[in-house]
Each structure stands twice: as structure tokens, then as C-alpha cells.
Image 1: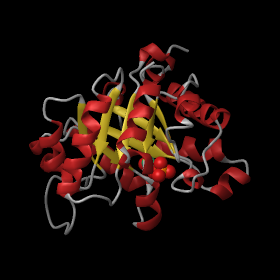
Image 2 (image 1 turned 45 degrees about the vertical axis):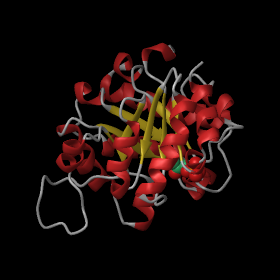
Image 3 (image 1 turned 60 degrees about the vertical axis):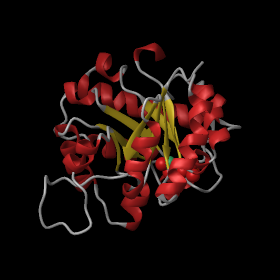
Length: 255
Ligand code: 13P
């Protein structure tokens, strides 16, 4: 296993937080703290904050992402945003399939797959979220759950397109709860996801895919999680809204 084959990526998921003015202030605080990062740094922000984030990050090492995208190019989809709308602004990354979208907004592996394919068609880099709920872990079916999600969500995605896919393993029971997967649990399930990718695309391709852990990753636990061989980065919720904490996580991924 060679972590050098794939970039470490630390991404913030701001969820439904921050006005445009607050986004500018947060990024201005964050910029100097992550300027020397030796990993990719991304902030995924609410749609209305995208322009402010793009303006504030200009000339810096911070890239900007959205938190979702629709699968159609345009049309009668009230409230939705297309990939072209995002790329036309300069937005490069997008989170797809977050458990909060699946739980609260009825997203399925089928719609997640459609969104993934639309984002890749538009040349975006996708952060695809997969992960089990508590009952699934307790029932011992975590491996099967993440395998099914990975296969269905990536259906039709070619090995070449996979170069623009990051997988975020986010155990749902660890999101926003303060409960973190142990480093061993994170490593084991990220390893399962890599094996599934190897089955789909071959081991050489699978070894180049960045797999993040997400779920209560913070300034204190990041270094140990990120030191695991199959954990190549983090998708950070709460701690990404605190510049010093986010910078500590970025530094832990930069070693
Ligand atoms: P927390 O870091 O707040 O647990 O959120 C994780 C997450 O959902 C990132 O997408």
C-alpha cells in the first residue's frame, strides 16, 4: 500500500452554515493558517456562499466546492442547481450522496449515481459519500452496505473518470455526534472500499483513489486517523467552521 500514489485531501463541509459575509471572514482567517499545506485543501459551502468563497480564495491554495448538484443540464427542477452553473462560476468540487441528503431529502443510490455522472461529465471533482447507519454496524453488515453503495453510486463511471472521484467514508453514527470511528474501524472500512474499487477497476486504479474519513474528525483525533494506510484525508463538518482546528487537521494530513 503506497499512500504516495494518491493525494491527501482535507475538505470542509460547511453544511447549512454561514452567510456570504461570514464565509468571507472565515476564509480570510483560514487562509494564512493553511497556506503551507502539503495536501489538497477544499471548502464545500452553501450555494449562496460560493461566489464569496471563490473571491476570498483567489490566489490561495484553497479550492471551492458545492454541497450537491442536480443531474440534469437545465429544466423544470425548482430549487436545484446544475453542474454547468457551478463550473461556469469556477467551482471545481462537489459533495454528492452525503448521508444528510440521503436521510432528510430522500436521495437514493440511483439519484446519487445520476448526480455523480452529471458532475463528472461537467469535469468536476466529486466527493462521493458512503457509510453505514448504527443499526447496520451493530448487525455486522457494514462491509456489505458500503460495497453496495460504492458499486451503485459509481455505476457507469469509467476508470478514467474515477481519477476525479474522491470517496468519503462517513459512518452515519459518527456524524455530528462526537462519536468517532476508531482508527482501526476507519482503516478497516476504508480498506473494504478500496477492495471493492479494486474489484471494479483493478488494484492499480484502486490504489490511486483518495479515500477520506468523515465523522467527528477534529483537531485532537485527526493525526491518528490520517496515519492509517487507507485513510487519505478527511471530510470535516463542525471542525471546518473553526479555522485553527481545520488548520490543525490540514497540518496532520500534510506530513
Ligand atoms: P462532523 O465532522 O460535524 O461530524 O460532520 C462530518 C460530515 O458530515 C462531513 O461531511
